[in-house]
Amino acid sequence: MKKKYKLTGFSRLFIFMIFFAPLAYIGASYYNGEDGIAKIKSLFEQNEGGTIQAQIDTKNIKIDKLSKKIESLKRDVDRLEASK
Image (cartoon, rainbow, N blue to C red; front, side):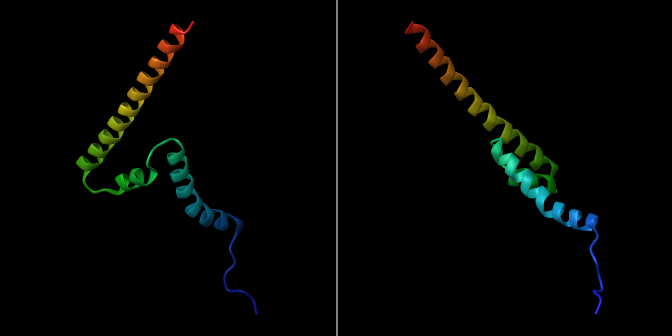
């Protein structure tokens, strides 16, 4: 008996990308230190104000982390310059 349906190469690629693309996006987001799942959820939120507030909160957290890192690096530079 012959199969009723046959998948073409493009349809296989399309089905693969439906599953692979979100996983790749989440993985890349986590690699960059971001929360990929929260970003996806914020895309589907109905309340625009909540989305903007979530983005602001995320940016503030990044700013705080980077400020702490900068201060730490400044202390390291000062310590190294003093040891010369």
